[in-house]
Amino acid sequence: MSTAPSEKKLSLIVANLLPYLRRHARALTGDQKTGDTYAAITLEALLSDRSVFDQIENPKVALFHAFHLIWASAGAPTGADETGLAKRAQEHLRRLTPNTREALLLHTIEDFSLDDVALIMGIDVENAAHLLAVAEAEMADSISGRVMVIEDEAIIALDLQGIVSDMGHEITGVASTQSEAVALGAQVKPDLILSDIQLADGSSGIDAVNDIMKAAAAIPVIFITAFPERLLTGERPEPAFVITKPYSEEQVRSAVSQAMFFSSTETLVS
Image (cartoon, rainbow, N blue to C red; front, top):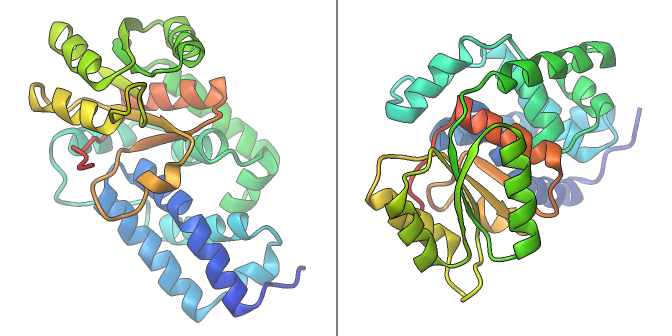
């Protein structure tokens, strides 16, 4: 049993953690509006009962546990009016073993330890490890495709190419600026885009993705940035997958597999 922080301090802590909870909810549901709804319900519940912060010492684990309780009690539903990629995403989700994807997202994208995943989901560590193993196997069976990399740092670009190629995907090319990315996208339409936010000439990876989207149907996008909170503001449409730099190979592999298997991408407005 731990001593929870003061109400004022707790409010600041939760505010700082909210972008990451929204990222998790967005990736879990495949829909920004639905994810935000669950995040908002979680905050409303905490206003009336903050005892979870007395029970769990780590505030981030406590916050995600509170979210999980609401998510699980609601039967993990998603938006009823989804269309396009989001609708297909939910069709994929229904074929997955229950709880595996949540465990995978918590461990790989949000970087929780196995112990933390178990605590958040209210299961033992062995069960959490089993869910992760099943999730990784199911994600490994995702379709292969063509991947474009938009990244201005040569070492990172080479690393991403290596990770994605080892997974069996084809690299359509690497672009370091917005104009290069648009030209590359026009030559070969990718099935997935891995993009940095800030590019070599000061141009924007978000703008590059928007320009590519104008000439093609919706394409799954994974943004990789050192400042995810700048993208996860709730003030505009957001991508389903945002990886924080420095990233791990496991995070990239997980996000790529899930984006190929399950993805919802909206045009972003920079």
